[in-house]
Length: 384
Image 1 (cartoon, rainbow, N blue to C red):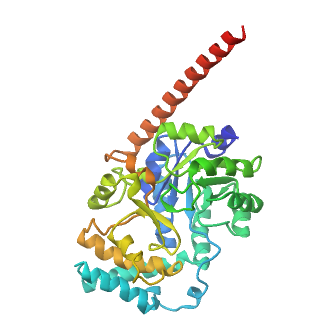
Image 2 (spheres, rainbow, N blue to C red):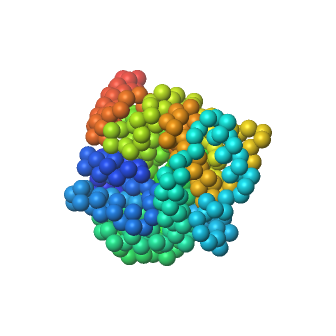
């Protein structure tokens, strides 16, 4: 199955590089891996530009796209008119604004805030159920896309059918064995077994425990990628030893030179330890692992209101983050990142990370082979 997946997607190293940054996707793919662009930040016209740019820089290699498809968005959102920011509940909006004021974070200048809200209004409808279809239509226009991943649930049946008709594999992120069974029943080809160590939306089962369960559930039906806490070649070898056919990495690209994070944001992550991450609903309304900050602490305080459902909580978070970013307040900054952040200590290039991962992986396999050979010799000697 590993060779089959490699043949179908055209990668050499079993490393799937997930990133919202097109430069990371291209560099990881050109280095032998398989880049996957996260599309949650784009409106259709913006996604069209990003995919066209990737097409023009990735050569003859294939790549993937990850779209936030979910089964439980707030159904009231579809009936709202105008920007979603105008419909934020007073209790949650007032809580955030009052907290930012107490923290001494200046409000956005009127002109910049107007531009921000306008840009957000163009994108926000595409993180709803109906908006997903518009993003998928963009994907169909790019034949180098060979993997379409549903990030928050099973892809709609018509999307799976159309993807397969175009020769595109369908992937799904799984945080529990039952997720894997639902994905397989729907026709998914690739399962991302994402443990609780992972950054972003994640469940509560650790990678070491989750991967073999997903492998068992998907046996003969789908390929499995191990995800969550993977940032070294040794961990790649461990994932494959658990039955996965590759690994899915996201956090390790955040501090590369190609990443589009601001310098102060990278500094926050480079200083963080593995235990400095938390799971919180304050970013999207669903559990997200991110680096802990005074912002995440505020939402855990007794006086904090309930978080909103998606996509409204994300709209609220983006308004707060714009003020935090403009003030460069590293003590308030949080971003989705996994526990592997404790291994991230230097800003390097994507190509350097890819080379390190592959070198460490080969060294690990060689060491394991020598260990097994030595054990076999000892057993043979005992038997004789």
